[in-house]
Image 1 (spheres, helix red, strand yellow):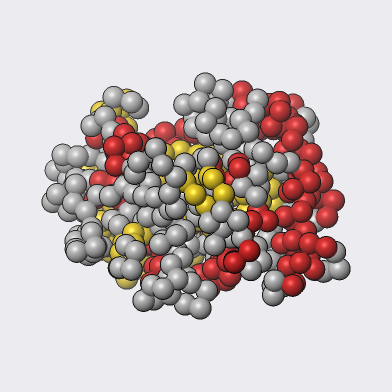
Image 2 (cartoon, rainbow, N blue to C red; image 1 turned 90 degrees about the horizontal axis):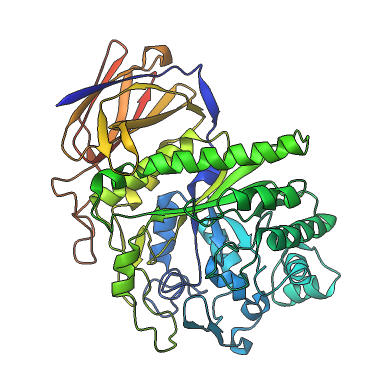
Length: 499
């Protein structure tokens, strides 16, 4: 057993907790939509065909914002296909995921689903095969109060203005796999024109420019610089996307994935600030980390359905997550919270079935994957101000990142309540952590939960949906000192109060 020390002082803040940190992502990919969030005829389906069991789990997950409809899918999407009477909607080939899109679920349904789930919609625009005019058309249909062709069409479809304020200007257009792949100069110019023109209608929109689809892209850094030089005055945020997996069996590096996320965010903010300095602008660009998760890409290639035929909602990247994956997801949330001064939006990709915290079976049950729990608990407990911590921890050696702290942590403080989130990245050692909370005035542990199992590869399933569930954490509070025992490969959350 080893030990670590942390000092917490509510006077040292990073930024307020941003509720949009707890976003997710719904893409027309695999079974995320069809038999995921939407399945008419299911025993729990409501009048709109939405699975109420999935709606309940979405609310329990604590989701704040949902990005839609892609992802790669959006770069070939015609939004008009998903509005109005369902019986008149066309079936289309989806080139992004080699499937058939029925358009039975579209914009109108998504906005109704958001209202029932209690989440904010984040709309992505097709800047792959389409451009400025199509973006303006979607904006008019979605937001204009009435008296124009497209706003009146929405009213004919029985809907009031949708009031969408958060928009993504395309998706991953730096990627050669993307429909409409562009150079940074091509994309930057198109994004700037789209943003500038949309603001002629609604100046207060919140707009996200596409950043690199991965920090491993050969154009990373250059892409951000050139795109922001074109768009800086017209956008609010630039996107980051990152997926982490353990396909190569390097568990130590996998458990330290948040080190990469930290460096990614720091690199993009530095680039954005450099461009701002070049332009002599006082404006600060935020980060929209609107795709992040654990994704076993090699495993996905082996388990996806056949690609020699076109199907409706084929099974795609339905990763089965284990305890180790859940610990990594919890650590990635620690990283996002730690950067609350710059991360304005974050979206776990995706919500249902496709690399998701929620799994379903057609005409069957819905259940929580192990990754569900750290997200739901963090969303529920994080409040007030994110605090800057001082941590003294033993290290673990990794092939990708060198020596990294075994213990990573973040805390939030609000009106006499302190929330502390900790992770043990070591796959071998239990760590006793002593946290000095004397400056916060807390006297009572109200809640202490842990995600851990003797088998770090344990999973949940339809037959055993609660095999991995939160369990009590070993913690003690005396004389301003909080002591927490972190088993190897574990994530812990605590809520303390002054009462």
